[in-house]
Image 1 (tube, rainbow, N blue to C red):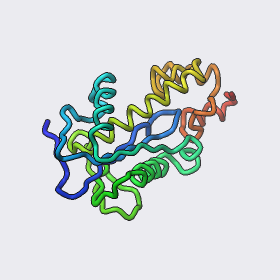
Image 2: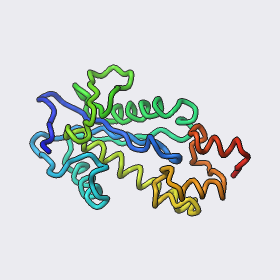
Image 3: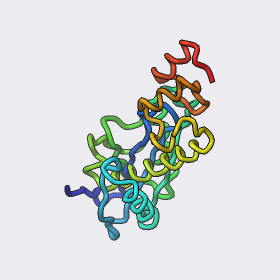
Length: 199
């Protein structure tokens, strides 16, 4: 698969990680690659092994012209809804860059409501190098946080499923109740709370 670099403008790629899980923050990253230093092996983070993601994240941070990782908290997810919280994390990621982008390419079918010249690209994380790089940084950052949360709440095995609604995760929520990192606005958690499953 041939990845497409942006134009000669200062192009930033943006992607998120963690929209679907039942627990933990949602993350986003923004990356401006250096055209003089192409990075081999970039791809949709979900199509890479954990080892490959970690290796590429190190290279991206070292070789990119600029990068920034941001997040929206569980409280913001529950208050705003996951879509708006994701848009907020993306905005924070771009605003945190040390270089102002001239164009922002966003994975998916919509862009945040911001003042940047931007374009949404379906499956951009597999097609556009800048977005692939952003997807890797967002994914590795969120996974690291979920491993950290595993240390605080080992009964849920966050390190194993990263907060997604696996059968084992749902069973753990039912057994132990949701912890403060669970998204109470998400149906499985909300329904358990309605049934009286409390932490």
